[in-house]
Image 1 (tube, rainbow, N blue to C red):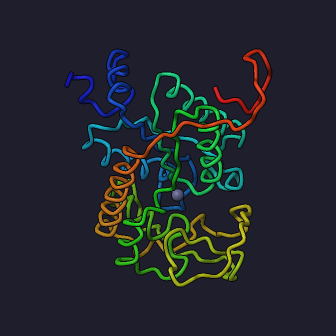
Image 2 (image 1 turned 90 degrees about the vertical axis):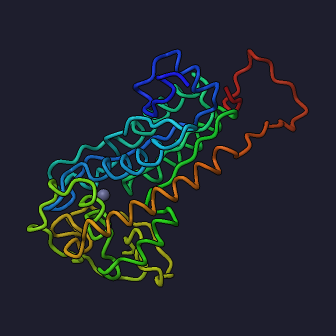
Amino acid sequence: MSHDQSNYRYQKLTWPAINEAVEAERMVVIPVGSTEDHGPHLPLDVDQVIPGTICERTVKTRSDALLFPTVQHGFLPHHMDFPGGITVKWDRFVEYLLDLCFSLAHHGFQKLLLVNGHGSNAHLLEQVARQVIVQYPGVQCGSLSWWEIEEFQAEFRAHAEAGPRGSAHAGEMETSVYLAIDPDAVDMAKAERDISYPMGDHFYAYGLADDPDDVSTNVSLMEWWSTISRTGVKGDPTVATAEKGEAFLAGAVAGLHSILDEFAEFPIREIEDHHDREVENSDYDPFRPR
Ligand SMILES: [Zn+2]
């Protein structure tokens, strides 16, 4: 293995090493975050740092994957009533991510995984992943949010103390993980429990990982942040600890390994167009893949 190919960070490779990585069928893991208020006790980069760390800890021990630089800015117009957030218009965000993925597909990479760290990116990342496959049938692109990883959720259920809705935003979950990664950047003296929004059954199910017993129908309804949080927090960061954060990270890393193990083997099947009609190359057909 050449020096370059032993490197897991995409941007540190040379162009000949990119050819080698494509030839070796390495997957590309793309953390996607945001720059957004996370209460008075956490910095703005929580949603970048957490998925970036999970992906780095996972990919650096694998020879079959590359880590793409974390996408730092995401979709958060409803957070612009708190200072600091950087929001990218929804279609521009989708188009930008498509350009990243199409570039990777152009070079020959066939397996792309978007790992999200910011709740309001999730629906757009799913759109991106679908669009990549529609345009490049020889490429698989998947997306998930890190807190959906089942091994993380098992650790969360084992360690969480905040109770229902303690971890929607900047609460026990994110604060614990950030404490594990960079404790000097967390001001626990300013951490404050804030579950000030109404606790309905159908319209306020914001908990990301908690509340396994809550099986009520969740209607998606994302309001302006200041109408549902007093401090920018939704949850309880006061019970966060670095020890819990390490357990949460370990679960997320173990789960991402198992996802990548399966993704590496997942077959890419040929599409078969069942129409009788012939389409000339010169004909315009928006449904014809590239
Ligand atoms: Zn967050």
